Length: 341
Ligand SMILES: [Zn+2]
Ligand SMILES: [Zn+2]
Image 1 (cartoon, rainbow, N blue to C red):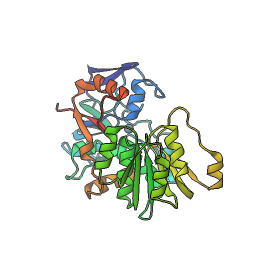
Image 2: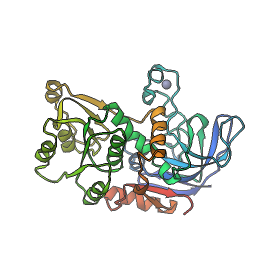
Image 3: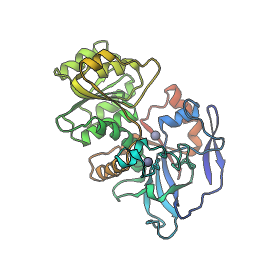
Image 4: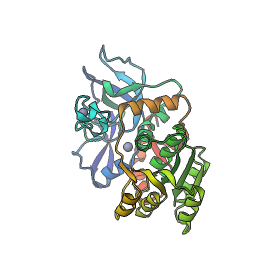
């Protein structure tokens, strides 16, 4: 089969690999769509993720069951989506509904250091972390379920509801999907900040964003605060820029909730502002299995639709796309390998 391997620093290569086989615990998925994630970029640049040579990355993917053993609950041809987590289900965290913190979270997960991932024609995934897709969710959109779940987890940690005024800093895939998740949870008002003109336009056209503020505007803080004078209930930092994180914190009302989904050099949080206003700061990582199932349901009900944010590319375009993502010349919200290309 064809697969993409990280070969070394800034090197991703299309290679021929042996096709995986199904066993009692794993089924083989014929991958149709696999998305490129910011953490894949970290693997490409070897910042924060050290992977064994020859490992296949890719943890946002969907496809059809290619091979499965009796008793798996699946049949050949089922349209499915894979999770990139394998929590143990029986530890302190799993038992308290916080399986995203399980030590076994990535142990057998595809594309994040466990089993080989979805940048390939075929990928094996543990049966208990595969979900069938409703007919009305396309395989392309299904490849974006995982990143939507990353955003949904932060939105849930902050307790977004129909009374929430929400500020999202950063309009990349995770920020945009956080807005979509907050809207699906009924948020009253959603503001988003972004500096990149292309991304500003995309956010302005999104029906789940109420207002977009240009992060390059020197008066952005006054403008954002003027919209919700009592202060925002919730802010979610998705940009990785210290100035945006500061803005997100200072725009909150007293007792407000803040989730951090991105980080960058120079991050500093104002301890006095957090203490005096009793701000709740949430680090947010991955998602829980019920959240994954909830996002599938919300997509199926049409309450989340991110279909148009995926731009399809061929596996052969991997190296050029990774380079373009790092220098900013690739503007799409999400690049997705279409394995039929
Ligand atoms: Zn990801
Ligand atoms: Zn566990």
